[in-house]
Length: 225
Image 1 (cartoon, one colour):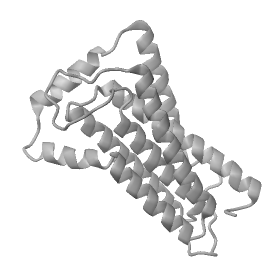
Image 2 (image 1 turned 180 degrees about the vertical axis):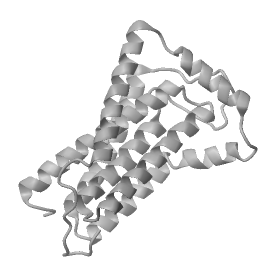
Image 3 (image 1 turned 30 degrees about the vertical axis):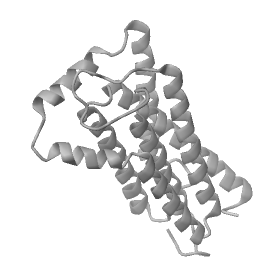
């Protein structure tokens, strides 16, 4: 990003990496919905993956690493991240981007909680949970919320970051974080894989929706004012 008062022109069209993961997220959502029509959850792959991961277990350090990684998708960390980034954007006088960051993250969290309460899918009990959890299972709140926050931050940053390589790095870093957080939930035994897939799909599409809405608003008002 450039200093306050500088040239904030970034990507005016949806970057190809974001477009690609958007298509994948939409396809994934459709596949999960079709799966529910012809099958019941948990799906066969849900059980196989959870049992397979716990049987494998991995190196001794992996459970501790998974707990640390999963915390990056928790409400406390995400709230701190959004607050700090929004503050930085405000200091840079990127008012529209700051407002969109806060609004997209807050409304996304509310939407995830509402979906969870309406569907009411119970947590998996095939293996002992390696962390304490509450509320319902579908979709994974950590997977969905991390996608909402990190992909929204990266996506909106592409609109105000002139350097193409920097834009690609931000998107790649966000995708890596979201992927690691979602995978940690399955490894810890607290979510079915389909919970995580649904969370990724929802969060990605939510972030892309806010990319589009913010781009439209930016074009309408002529910048960040």
